[in-house]
Image (cartoon, rainbow, N blue to C red):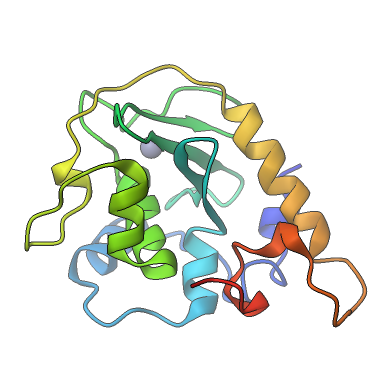
Amino acid sequence: MIEVVRDRSVTGGMGLDVDEAGWERRSAVRIVPPARPRKLAKVPFVELADGRLQGVVSSGSDISRVYVSSISAGSHAYNCRTNNNRPCGGLRGLPCKHLRALADEAVLQYGLERVARYLKVDVDESGDLVSALGGSPEPSDAAVVFSRFLRHLSYLELPGTTVPVPELHWFPAAGAVR
Ligand SMILES: [Zn+2]
């Protein structure tokens, strides 16, 4: 299953970050939003669906691994698991870097206001969405989110068409993101 993530056509031809320290450094000092291909490499899938902000985040150190991260609207309960449905080692009572990457990407894709409204969270002027969350970790099944990701990927292999594909609404190139 993981082959699709390693496919460079999916990651925008950029490959995946393999330097853990570099990944965190770039993440921490990112001021100018990176080009779309690099964002796809790090967070190939993000959506507001099923009452959650959820998505798939590439591992910073292991190109054969991705994390499935989610934050529930309202309760702000969060979870992060590997694509093999194992708990994320970075989840120790606080949101891990994958959840932060997911939130950052959602804000880039949907805008802070829309994401905050969906999650029902009050974000102060710092704009730090994750720090404004009051939830705690909750168990949830990564398989559900991951299967949605794989289904979305299957659309990337559809032949070109001018007819809107509703399932691709999350993808900015479809032009349907408001
Ligand atoms: Zn994580």
